[in-house]
Length: 510
Image 1 (cartoon, one colour):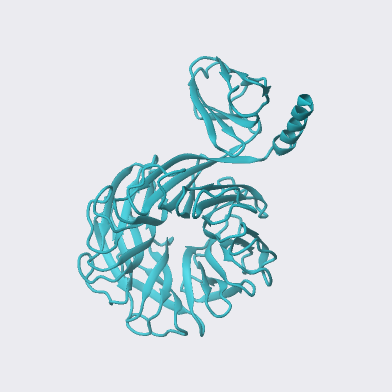
Image 2 (cartoon, helix red, strand yellow):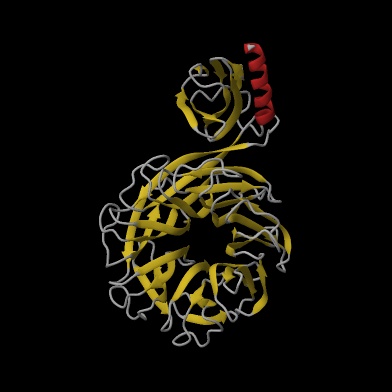
């Protein structure tokens, strides 16, 4: 009977693991929190030329990692090195509410941060009480070089920013004003786009909208020097909206996508091979949306250069799942999406609390390749994401948890940076030649023989869920490891030495 059980187990593991030679197991490589005793969080971030990160965050704190606060909530800018250590951090604002969203490196050095402000003191000269868009340029050490506010008597804000090829900047957001810097509001709110010069002056500014409300989440310059804008319209029902502009802000095309539910586009990135990939959230299951897993789903839509849908897919479980950011893979063989999930079924493997950050990887036609949730017993979410040269992904998050994957919460909400690597399961694309790992079917002992020149290696063992169960360093060419205390099942053995890698599948049996 025991032999029959073992045979059945091996058959299942073979089907799950060996027949899926392309399966990937995502694991957390590093995790760091930043903040003080009050609420702190992050919105978007990006790579810096030195391989580190520049992070656009917000803070209510004046202790811990935060050295000062102007009052209420401040812009909080952090320069991190490649390992996530703070090199410097600064706050900006006045006595009112100052809330950043986006950041981009400057063409002439430094960084440009964009968000909104309700202050008219401190680092601000003037602003309308309801809130103005605020664009701020700082040098490489965070010292203010220039500051620009845009607004009227209503609420005005910036969500997205990008650097242009002519060393200027383009920003987008929403406006509720029909005076001041805004000459006309079509409905009760409009999407707006402005081009900002290298010294902070407004070169041009335009509004886009209909009779309802429109908002933009992000903007990117396109290869033809125009721009692609992602957002949504609130005209019932709410639809995702993508606007293609030329280099002067004139509309080339504008299209809405969705069904009879509510649909939102949080980003649309230009693809290296042409066209665009839109990410967002939908609770529709008709119109442009073929299916829905429950409440709101992640939604990916592949568009051609004219905005025509080439394919669309939804991902999620029975609860609320929201996609915030997307990037192409380094090898141009798919896309990775970051967001939030409240589900623990469907495409979502597990959930540790009130909601987790959720990262998914798909191929070029939207097939789900891998997914991972990360967080603790409270609320956690992710928004920004960048692809790293080593094949990993750094995800920007906000966490209120103090357990699970979260280590070192400072109090309340914290900014949280997580680096995730989707390790390849199997022996495909081995970089270290002539490594011998045997037996790969074992009840306990596994021998590792390294080739000449690879006497020192880092070894990590992961279970099929991507959890690291063992890690150690071998100093000689021949090492024996013992996994007899591990549960029976499939494991991935990852060996790294001199910047090269090798992966092997191990099946543990009793």
